[in-house]
Image (cartoon, rainbow over all chains, first blue to last red; front, side):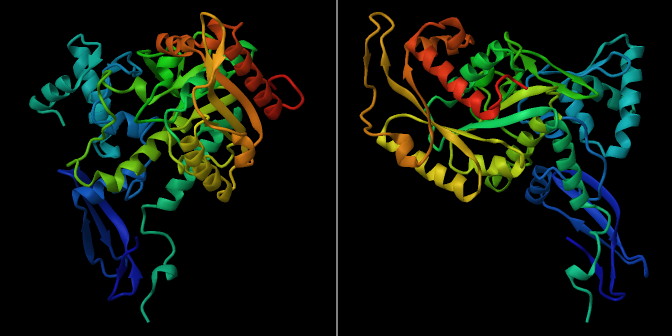
Length: 140
Length: 298
């Protein structure tokens, strides 16, 4: 899919990607000549179709091993994967999945902040509940 | 005249083509350490592909081959059960996800290892389950590609891929895995199975997939008490000849094959002296000769 600024007859480039939020992704394209911007807003079915293809609109680095399996399974066995970070913390599959839903640029910082929050409490496992707790206290 | 699609280079920054190429490159890199990749396939369900796969893996592993098994049946995974690795926790490292390991060192990857419990079907997170027919197959293809690419298989002499039933499965796998060495076709001696398998064979041929030959499973009943044999099905004539495939073996049914499978213990290893085990070993020998004409694993 490509976008063309009709007035300038120039191809538009990706400016930003937001979401998925409630099943919708917002991709904004801009014209390099006149600056005109348009946003592509996907419906949930379109979002899911793109997700199923394993590609990322707007680009981005691969999301790590078994990204689809780890993050998109409807019902996943807790502890199927032994996911330890450098600090020896175990991220449950559900917690890892939750993290993967964040925009790629935000993940490292969120991972670091939650890991610090867990260590400060003497915990060794990061769960979705702990992430909720961290968020309710003003985190990400 | 305004620019058309083909006048514009790139896609504005998503680089979808580059993403797909990068994905394929990672798959090629991973598969470079796997010497042979063979699919066990059939158009028909219920012909015993998975039990056959588990026993072949066990025989070759017992002979010193480094064997991996990928359970490509994502909706009805059974290989983890048959090879006794259910419930194993998988380890994630910088090299990928380390597969489960069975008693003979067989490396196993299966969706079974990820599903919540014994009753949980394979479902995908989605805003709504409606319309899943549009994207479900793509999701499964994506998961299968990840199992191939992101599993830290290590050095393998053979990766067996146990495919789900359905004629398009083997051609679809060949698209995903261009250096697939070939397929082992499984049928049972019933007319309906031959009919269904014939369509799958035809589709694989039109797709240019190499077929090593045909295995007739459940070819007769072997009584474990008196040792006598009898027919289970009424199919007549050579199925392999009818399908234009090389006959690779006829495996009689022994009830202990099923009970061993249920216990996660490969029958051919547990009961090496039976007629069915002998037939399985001959099949493994023909496959080995096909993959390594010079003999040996490497």
